[in-house]
Image (cartoon, rainbow, N blue to C red; front, side, top):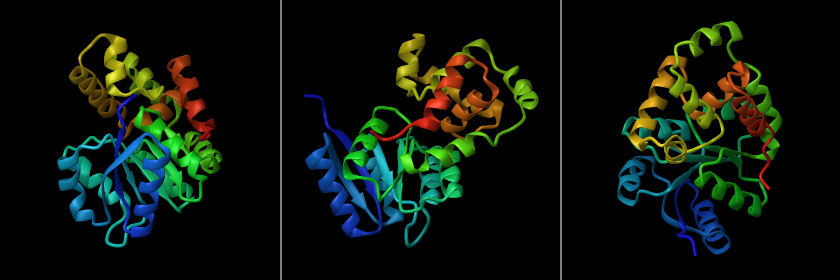
Length: 232
């Protein structure tokens, strides 16, 4: 039996935390190792428990979820984050994706869809609520002009383009390292250089970039699949 996915929940509603914990632990192969509603405790708990994935509410009483995300990234924590929220706002989703989340899910989704989506996110996939698919497609269509993008792509090395295409397919650094036969740290370095050269802020933006510029068929197809993804 495969090891359980270790989850951290951040939601300031105790009922939501307990309900989601029961759902993930009893119906999914997951373990909620820690749950909190206090943003000040997120970084210490994250470092202590080192979960595989964080599920974060977008609307917290003391501070918004994106501020929490920026805080943990500023502290050097790279734990993947999935937003689980009531907000179906296109602007909220765009801001979350720009901030580098691995998924954007809605609290009114069917329980089975939530379990499946969180499980796939833990395996390195990008997940988006089916109700948000059209809005994601609109976000994908609103990027820089191809001519400008071409100038940016020209700054990438051949290896960086290879890494970019893997990032656009939703591959984790570990998967990319294995595919290209390079170290995990080398992949991280390439990704950092790509983000800097292309003026991007998240792996999702990299997929969008590959889609809009079309620097490879794989990148284009990957971003199209992201825009069409449903949780089933």
